[in-house]
Amino acid sequence: MDQTARTRLTQAQSHFSPEGTYLNTATHGLLSHRARLDLERNLRELSAGRFSPGSVDGVVDAARASYARLTGVDADRVAVGTHTSQFVGTVAASLPPGAEVLLAEGEFTSVVFPLMAHGLRVREVPLDRLPDEVGPGTALVAVAAVQSATGRIAPLRDLSAACADHGARLLLDTSQSAGWLATPVADYVVCSTYKWLLGPRGAAFLTGTDEALAELSPLAPGWYAGADPWNSLYGGPLRLAEGARRLDMAPVWPAWIGLAPGLELLGEVGLETVHAHDVALADRFRNAMGVEATGSAIVSLAVPDGTAERLQEAGILAALRDGRLRVGFHLYNTEEDVDRLVGALT
Image (cartoon, rainbow, N blue to C red; front, top):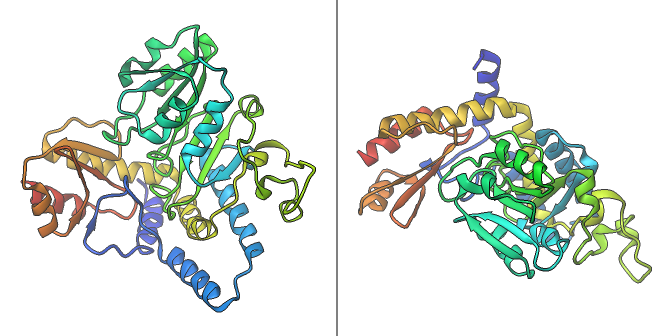
């Protein structure tokens, strides 16, 4: 990492004030100082009766544009919503009944449940077997680019090739990767923003190719999907926006107020710099624990009983589930955080 990138990273780290050692971004990312101030101002306006909903339109537009730049797509191919499961459900509803859908075993249920609830023939297979299982009868492959439970990176290049060979659509969930890992091209990409994109819970994105997005119909369009939202509040006729915006869902205003600064900050640092930093920290931890490097910012490993108490005593916040520790390293973490974690575990 060159000196300019390191300076940008150091400046970005000054925008956060974690209490203790925070290694739980895979559950929820930290809010920046500016995001907190913007949200506090919003609360004061709400309390004083001075809040104007229309004032958030520009914030949503800015977040849409920032996300588009971060992921390398045009802003007019970005739809906004609240949860990934809503967008996965929109894709599921576009498939014919009984169509074959492939999922990775152990996939997060925001991807799994919407597809299982729409009368589709869903098969769950091991992650590394997904490309081999795609066949002429496969309509859709849905997978997280980075697995939530394990941090494993999906075989995206082989999956893209297999889907192209058999005419299947590929849906990626980038909730655990957008913000530190480049977003690959796929027919559909869904993303919740409260993890690595540093926003509060309640905002999500859907992007995709023009051809794939054209096949989708909004499941429950509201006023925000209107061609002119503020003139779409009452009555017919149906007057939806063109392009991806017809899939927009009405924003949870505080979520977007808190998200926009995080997206802007990530853009200032640069995805390449964040990726190099995050993965270097994760590999430093893996090396100390005798685990092979994987290129992921998320590390999961089995730990003995009593680990939760040891982490609490050391002031370290991470996720412990089913006898495994999951830690995520992001731009606000440092080598000292890694060494503190290693010391607590060893």
